[in-house]
Image (cartoon, rainbow, N blue to C red; front, side, top):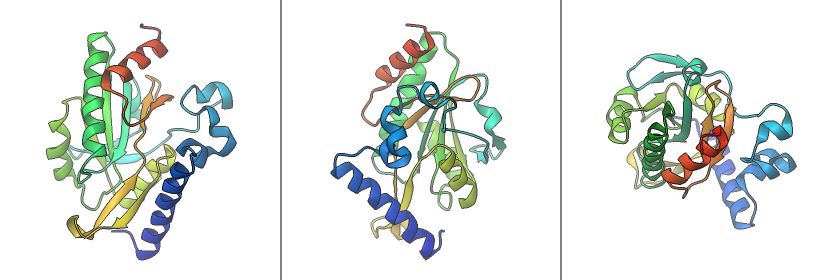
Amino acid sequence: MASKTDTTRYALIAAACVVAVILGGSLSMLIFGDRGKGFGENLSSQMGEALIGGPFSLVDHHGNPVDESMLKGKITLMYFGYTFCPDFCPAGLQEMAAALDGLKEAGIDAQGVFVSVDPERDTVDVMAEYVPLFHPDIIGLTGTLEQTDATAKKWRAVYGFVEDESFTDGYSVEHTTLMYAMGTDGRFLMHFTHGETGAEIAAKLLRRLGNS
């Protein structure tokens, strides 16, 4: 579990995200400043090389060590969350599953990746029980807090631990709800926001890939 200092730091980051939303700001602006105005449209065309993704070292829900090479060769949909999440994560993974089915029907080889931001509770065994409930082609990733935190930073995924006695161990995790699409070369393609359906996600990706 994170130290009190880390917990406070993460809570402040989460609070800043909430304030940004209330004031009409966007998460992309919070993360990128002025550079985030076109976030999700095509970062690579605006900034040369997208600032999303990079090297990481984690463990999949079968207990196998994995790194960024697992993203190559397939279209990948990535989501950062945790298994104890009561609403956003299950909804996001359901839409991810629907999008994977839509891409498969269009002849696109794709996989889903669910990265835990709560590794203390999301052990390999917990992930192994949770992830297959949504789709056989979704892979759960976990690791040490340092590993998952480093990975989240590479994807600009913001999260924070919040005291909540209604949850096991007395805390919940506030986190971004973006879904990231990575190309077959492992590089960022585009992102999707919470509320977009699996059909919409698949359709947008197919258009981006020139398959529409």
